[in-house]
Amino acid sequence: MTTASPTVSTAEAIAEAAAPPRRRWRWLRKNPTLILGALLLLVVVALSIAAPWIATHDPQDIDPMVRLQNSSAEHYFGTDAQGRDVFSRVVWGGRVSMIVALSVAVLATFFGVLLGLTAGFVRWADGPVMRVMDGLMAIPGILLAIALMAVTRASLLTVVVAITVPEIPRVVRLVRSLALTLREQLYVEAAHAVGTRLPVILWRHVLPNMLAPLVVQATFVAASAVLIEASLSFLGVGVPAQTPSWGNMMAEGRNYVAIAFHNILYPGVLLAATVLAINMLGDGLRDALDPRLARQL
Image (cartoon, rainbow, N blue to C red; front, side, top):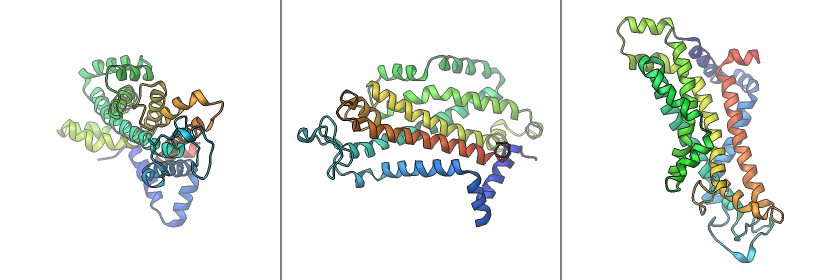
C-alpha cells in the first residue's frame, strides 16, 4: 500500500539528520533557524529546571531593607518592591511558563486531533463539531480565558485549562482540512475496500501523514500559551500572585518602572526570548520536515 508524500518527505528529512557527519553538517547548515531556536529554548529550559540550584535566594523571601536595589554581587538582577531577589524569581518563573507551554500544546493537540478526525471522517459529526469550533473562535482567546478564570479558583491547573480551550479550534481546523484531503487518497479508499476498520485506518495511514504539520502547529500553540499565561498573570487573573511568574513580576514592577526598570526588564527579556525560540523552532521544523518547501524558499 502506497504512503502519501508528506510521510515520505518526513522520512527523508529524518534520514538526512541521521546521515554521516558530512551530510549531517550540510543538513544543519540548511536549517539554521531550527538550530538557533532549539539552542535558545534549551537555555531557557535548562535555567528553569536548574532553578533550585542556581537561584541565589528563596524567591518568596521578603527583605524590605534592600527593596528596589539595582544589580549587585548579592542580587544579580536587583530586587523588587518587597526586597525579593529578581534573578531567583525570574528563573523560578520560567518553570511556570514551560509547564503551561508543554501542557497546553499536548492537550490542545490531543483534543484537536480527536475532534478534527471525527469531523473529517464521520460525516454526520462534521457540522455540529465545526459549528462549536466556530463559536469558540468567534470569541478572542484572551477574553475566553479570562471568563473561565473568573468562575474558578486561581491555580496553575486552571490556567492550563483556560488557555487550552481557546487553542483547540486552531488544531481542529488544521486536522479537519488534512483529513478531508487524505480521506480521498487511493490508499485510504483501498483500506476501506478491504474492510479495514476506521480506527485502524486513522492510526496506520492518516495520522502518520499529519505528523509534520501537527508538530509545527504544536510549537505555535506553545508559544501562544506562554504569551497568554503572562497576559493573564499580568492582569491578575492567572496564577496566584505569590507564585513567581514572568507576568506577575511585570505586573508588580510596572508601578516602579521609573525608578527600578529592571523589575520588568529581565522577565520581559526572558518572555520574549522564550516565545522567539519556540517560534523559530516551529519555523525550522516546518522547513526541515518538508524538504520541498525548503527548496522553494
